[in-house]
Image (cartoon, rainbow, N blue to C red; front, side, top):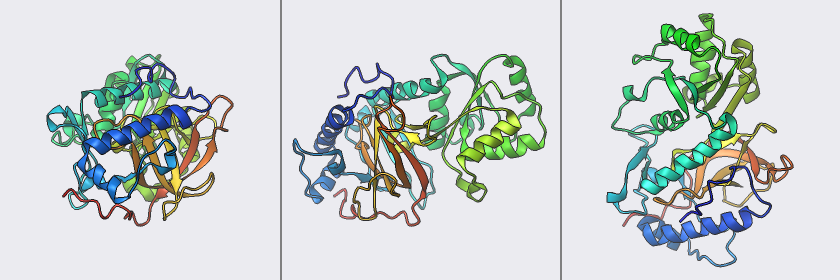
Amino acid sequence: MLNKKLFDNSPYSIEENYFKKIYLKAIINLTKYHFNNCKIYKKLFNTLNFKLSKKTTIQEIPFIPTRLFKYYDLISIKKNKVVKTLISSGTSSQGYSKIYLDKVNSENQVKALKNLISSILGNLRLPMLIIDKNPKYYNRNQFNAKTAAILGFSIFGKNHFYILDKNGNIDYKGLKKFFEVYKNEQIFIFGFTSNIYEILLEKLSLKKFDVNFSNSVLLHGGGWKKLEKYKISNLDFKKKLNKKFKIEKVYNYYGTIEQAGSIFLECENCGGFRTSRYSDILIRDKNFKVLPKFKKGIIQIFSILPTSYPGHSLLTEDEGLIIHDKDCTKNFKGKCFLIKGRLAQAELRGCSDVTSN
């Protein structure tokens, strides 16, 4: 379904009319495919009385609120073709999103993520420090967003060291040994933003643990979660990491489990998150009208990777605004955007008539 040459180019090598022509065609083809193969998506489509045409624009493509994945099995393949099921983080009262992947969809996610991560790490696998515990100590019955991220990014590193032991305590002895072995090599550090703050900036720095992180690339994402009251700006976050550990290369990313693989990496030029050959975004108001650049609203995300489930056009529960559209740098023809937080009331109307009956 996807162009075989999609993964041959840099994810940020975007021609002038790429999104209006090539990307839009891919999204329309996915819309047709999921309409014909997913019963619930078809019902949504029919409820909206929407019809595709040659003049259909990206703004007109129907979206699915991400929370709909908590209530319905949204799947466009036969269940016996499923090779992996991703499960979102959450509570039993909130429900869990289930994302069904077949072999092709799973492989394409890895290819896209590899290209995106290579843009900051290069093509070599680096010794990897993970600011978490080994996923084997989590509930393996639930391949959730957290374990999926750890395992997903782990394939781009080698000789992995998990900073926490199975009880969630810092393994100081193991950490010291890790840095003794790789003191002259570049290191890839990965963790969730809240973990980086709590474990590195709080616990490790208080211990005055003598390690040199200067030759490192740090990637973080996932927001502040339970540490929301300690939230600081991305710039201040970087300054603290540089001041305490001399880390200069720090990248944030934004992504959802419903569109795993096509994450949005931080732009080195403006500090926002940028789209790629695999992804695009729109900003909508509370009535779902598309907003122009610099106007804050609900983030709608697109991905051309989801072929086994209708996750190609999603309305998130996050607010943000576009700050660049083809004008961030001379050679980048995508968009850059900022996240401004979660919706106060993450109950999005518009799909209330969709049922599985």
